[in-house]
Length: 371
Ligand code: COA
Image (cartoon, rainbow, N blue to C red; front, side, top):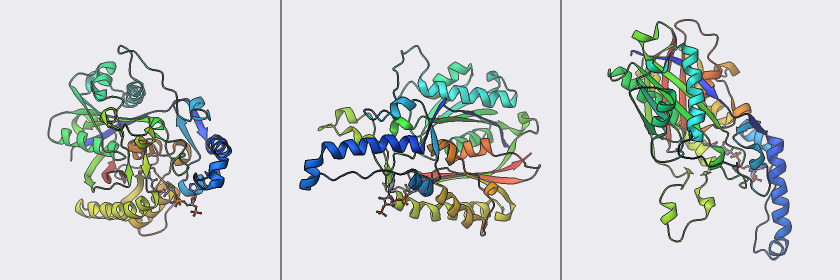
């Protein structure tokens, strides 16, 4: 293949929320709910809510903190969601601003000018609006010529975007493609739901994919890529433009992220491990050639299980790095952020795998070799 991952870039919000801070707010909400509903709870017509715990969150998920666009709103027990200030149509959209910052970081690291880029793919779990396209807004803000488009495949949005970029380079349609994954996920999260209130964090990541002819021998050659999907309702959000016309109008809670976490864990881990091993075989690669796996970052225990199945042995932490402690689950951005943060220490010829998995179900693999 002739596509090369030339550079990556990252944007994070200034503020982050620790498990203890999040749990203190959640438990204040629970205490108030139980007090306000004490009679109904005593009659058995309302179920008492249980408190959350930092210990559970860290053990069950590996998450210690998460970035958010508005800490005060998330930790305000009367609100429990970030505050987003509406912007005028002539201002840059919030997700575009995050994506542009990550894209500028990627361009700078590669020493590239926006004029060097032929196309922008904006890929994420959900777009701030349907149109005009977020990718085109970012293309305009960056001063890139050519074209842009949005796409979304839930937690595999990042890798599927990268696969699209690789294919565009492979077919000669572009020499340089910027994949931008702005994941502003905390507004999609129900901070009053004990099972999931700790899961997501906000971030934007960008990846510059170039043809080897322009990459100048720098970066990571793509050795192979694949995408797979299999329908499941176990991770779902019913948010969409039909909501406003639904009669009766659904509760807002129905529009947030919901999941059957246990089922997801059980079904996705074997599916992904099998896909990785099959893909490796079809690209003529072997597990012992993989120096590092940059896996999707949803849950530390999922990553341990998938990595152990792929390596066929116990492994060192730097063979499958985890960023959940700092970032939490950043949806479609997770595996690309893991790659961005942990791609040091590779000699030319050493290989690794970027792999996403999540809602859909969906999973994507991108095998790379250091140039
Ligand atoms: N604080 C304290 N205890 C909690 C809790 C919280 N916030 N949330 C759940 N619990 C309790 C439950 O009540 C349950 O108690 P019980 O055994 O007495 O009934 C126990 O912890 C286990 O709950 P469960 O929901 O089965 O937890 P889990 O071990 O499956 O972990 C996930 C939950 C979400 C971390 C886990 O299912 C998971 O990682 N799934 C993968 C899916 C994923 O992360 N997807 C993201 C999108 S890709």
